[in-house]
Length: 609
Image (tube, rainbow, N blue to C red; front, side):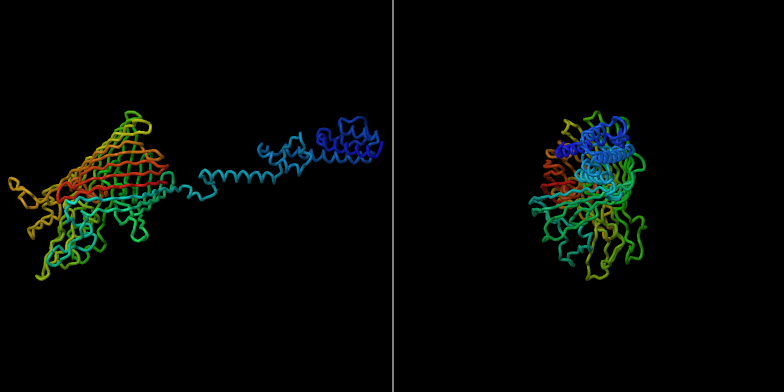
């Protein structure tokens, strides 16, 4: 045989040996047999080598080297097999990516047709890292957070908010009176000298005839923190042009000056049992169906508790109760006065309130609800002072003036002014509420789902100030020392002389009332959440001067307060998810007293998150 043929035979033998090396797992002992030992082997590779030796393609030495190599590879294959039996099965998806690395470590075990069950440790680590990176990427895409990425207390934090841009136009009637005194501004500052002989300046006056246009924003951002499954803390800040309870609107302009932020809410919600809430702090209004009594921006300070329960599938009921401090007597009161005419506890102002309500669902599409609330405004009524010098810094009942007021409630001058200097007749005054307030508010509503995305709501509200007494109001505003009434508003001049002398022509007669009511209809999507959602509403309300405490009523209707009646028409349309536009037209006028008519137009863009 030529050397070339012998060389080709050797190469063929080596290739066959390498291709079938793993077969030594089953016949490892044969791999140790020399070509000259024993009869035919059960290992086909060994028999082939012996044949090549007989054909003199291979020498005995070359055969010995090849068989030794086969033995080494068989030992290696046996070790791999034993490791595979004790190792955990690798994931099917990981085997393909690991094949290249396994081939580098154990080439014989990575040949085609071989089952590989062993994955080196560094490959396992690589797979683990790749899986972790993929999970984190998915978590970021879906807005999730890896459990160990943030502290546990952060996972209970939820941030919400909204932003509203508004165009507002105020259009006043040219026949409005011009002398509406801004008593709220007087009470918030220094007393106003009502004596024209010593004070030639007019008091602060409310605009009643000049149309106005404003661009405004409202921004609110809140944080909700789940402290425990039964305890949640809420904090919210909001804009506002001034520190008042009925508006978070911020008027733009002011030469681009920075805008104010206020603490809008800060309270804890504790849920001792299912359906019960105990609220402590500056909280969202816990009373339901209270649109007639409360402006939507009012948040209450104090403590409240509520409980709601269902009875079967058709009935549900709820109860709410709370105590809310309005104002405390200053620690340094009565300042320079020598004594107080009341105990300190009588001077503090509170609201004690409760509400009961229930609902009945005829079926999934019809719901009827009814509620009754009672509000006792304790200590808010003004008190006429004892004789007080006109040069005194402080009179004993100055504390009884309201800390905030809009307009409409009957007011009277609080000070019984005396003078010791005949050349000084100044009469500086503050003003207080002439009526007591204990308000009963009854509300009812029908919600009817006309279709899956179409709801009709009909609602009615009736409120009455059970503490109002006309004769008591007149008596409280009367100064026995001077023999004159000190009531400052809600006086209507008689144009004709009525029989019995009840209203002599040209004379001023006090006129007020204790009743308020409102009816409202709305139709559209139950909640404005998505593009295409819409709603329309119309309402009419009538609020007599002393029916409600004017401080907390709707600040948009009649520009706030009581002694007003009129219409509100509005609509909203969803542009995008949580983004909608809205428009309202509010037309109102006074019920009694000097004429005051105003139309208000508002166009809003709202975004929530």
